[in-house]
Amino acid sequence: MDMTRRLIATLALLAACGEKTEPKPKPEVKALGGVISPTAPAPSLTSLTAGIPGTSNGQTISWDGTAWTLSDECSDPTRRYCHVDEMNFVSSSACATLGEHFLGAAQSGGTCTLSSTSTHPSIMVFSTVGSGTGGVRYSSAGAATFSFGGGAGESCVTELVNWQTLSTSGEEYSTRFGFGVFSGFAEPADGVYARYDRAANGDIFVFRTCTNSTCTTLPLDGTGGTTNSPIAADTWYTTKMCVNGAGTSATITINGSLRGTITTNIPLESASRRTGVGGNHVKSNGTTARLFNLDYVKISLPFSVAR
Image 1 (cartoon, one colour):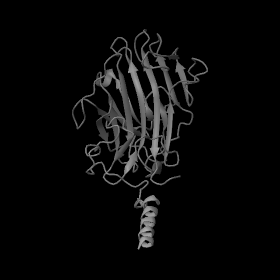
Image 2: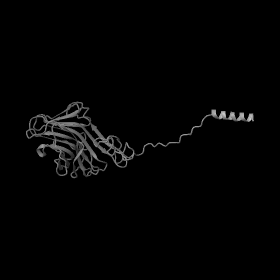
Image 3: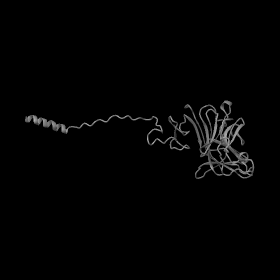
Image 4: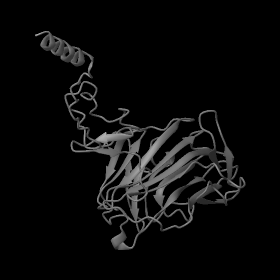
């Protein structure tokens, strides 16, 4: 019996001193990628319906009800064409060299000068100088570098602009900019562009489409489905002109708000009408310089299929 008790005690001691077996953790599955809806019940996502960071005028990604999409036109060169010129690199102040990708010219003493302000570094200043017909024009090196109506995607040009002094009957001038064949100092024969012409329409933005010199003119005066869009002196405006992929509709947006739409006289690839990007700023009366400031130009075209 004593031997049996000692054996039982020894076995109990060995069991107390042995390794304890911990339960093994259950395997976990972690998903990478996938789609998270902004309306999912997660507390941090329930209100993200406009995008991130959440402002319609500068968000990085947006939700279309199915997937997140990058909003920046320059994010993927295989899926979108993008060109931005900040007017930073100019070899001289002559009109022949504007930024990195634009060429300029002057008539009757017009000038192009690189300047800046504290909040707008590196801007191009176009001056009519003192001549009654002095002016400046600028354009992409190729006058026919953009085609509309091929179905690739929405073509847009954005320009940040400023007029230091408004036009008057004694010191009259006009300014045009956007898509267009700006090979001269007058209205382009083909284009989708914005215009400031006080003598014709007053101190407001005007939206125009032209094909082979047949044009549709839409003053943004608050009538005809437009939003009233006055121009004030020494005020910056972010202007964006777009043409849809089919070439059937053109829009103008100013400071992030849609102001007008045109569906006629859009120059189309099928009619062999092509445009470049640029503008002109021309005096018609008076002897005092009038200045038009250009901060940057951005051109974008997203493709429906990666190239």
